[in-house]
Length: 424
Ligand SMILES: Cc1ncc(COP(=O)(O)O)c(C=O)c1O
Image 1: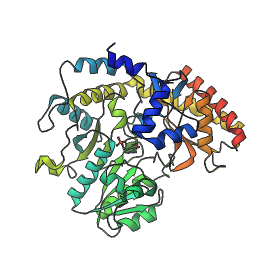
Image 2: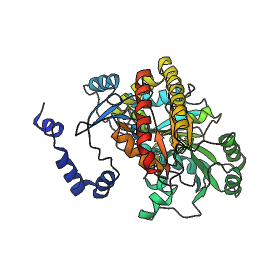
Image 3: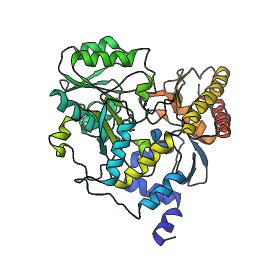
Image 4: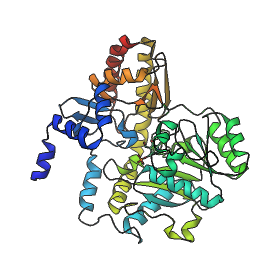
């Protein structure tokens, strides 16, 4: 092992925390310690994380789906190691082997109306690309999003976000450019669109940071119909809900609700958890600028060729028939077990679920999920509370879990929930 790597791999946890608090992010270091989850990830393997102290955790956060296929997935690592002998980031101005292959694959596996894939270095950047495409296509500026939405911390994405994120940097966006409506309120959506000056509606299929409230029956298709009626585009943020997480064999969650959007945004899991990449997949109307002025979006690391290799391998694994069937099997097994646990603990008030996306409700306390998170951590499960609704615990199992993994998750989850009972 090189001296550099040796010093990193064998670092001392107290020193890492001290340097993090001094040079990186004092508030975050303090906040996680105060919440009883002072995690500094050391070893990571499959769906297991090990804190530097050695404490083992099953990862049910997955960084929003980044680790859908597990940590350090062996197949993706092997592909990337070989790729390092041939590729680097590439030069973003030119056509490239990796970018051509990934863009083609993304379009081929998307709904049939899609034409181009514009590649980015991450999710927020891809959201901004999608919103710019909608403005280009409609020559309108206004963007409608959902109250308590979160689409990333870049410029336009932050304009669509909840004040919790936007206000600190005076990024809330002018009210005549960014309009926010309640989720699942179709009348409010129509009122926002009826002025006829809206470029697009941006919508997470199931809003993650808001605690995964499920769309009401017919809500998403009705939003799409309203978009068509008033000449706005539909931008589906599939950063967390895409890549098979909604189950049912749907690569994109939004199509599982019967909606063919104009733009699909993906990132996180597309990276295989190993090399950053994102994409806005767009239809002809939204991508029209690509034929007029290809320099409409410029990003040095956008679609880096190594990232393209990671993404191609990720798509291959995700679309295997075995993976597709496994997602539905995991979803059913965990749901059945969680139903049993819920019946035993009255403060576990509800389960939101679509495929392997779960929001566990602890509604009798305003910050119920924070208490449960702390106790689960002690019992060896890492699942995070929803920042914009701390009553709800995000519970996000990976796509390749085994039945034995599911049973261990259920056992440890029940132990954590039992321990949390005293907080309610
Ligand atoms: C739904 C959603 N969209 C967009 C983003 C932004 O992605 P990134 O952090 O890669 O910029 C996130 C990140 O958490 C997200 O959850």
